[in-house]
Image 1 (spheres, rainbow, N blue to C red):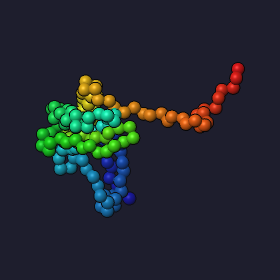
Image 2: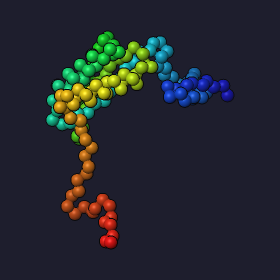
Image 3: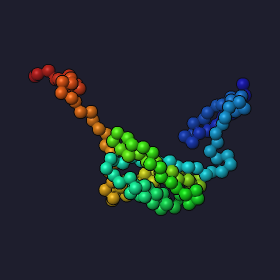
Image 4: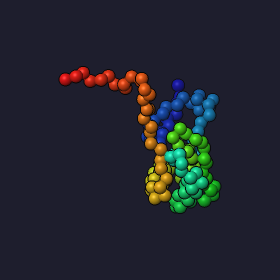
Length: 143
């Protein structure tokens, strides 16, 4: 069987039968250009001002020197979680190979700006036992 070797971004070698290359869709992140979109999911605590969150996220993306101005970055308010308001920061970058570094920059900037603006991030909620529920762990035997 004839096959093609492909190296992933994680340096893993994938051996793909040529018949799969001919008969199936193949994605290539750098074939025509290196442009890529970076999506950062962001959750904030209920009670946060969603318009302020929107503006802060947009400002963070616009301030980053490696985020493209065209297409312009955007923020989507994507939903309401049990403990959060859910957003997604979407930005385009000129080189897909720099996406991890740029995502790190954006995440640090988000945490720093949210702390400065007193915007909370949701904390995991431990289940609260109801009266009559068994204890989560068996009681230790008396000494």
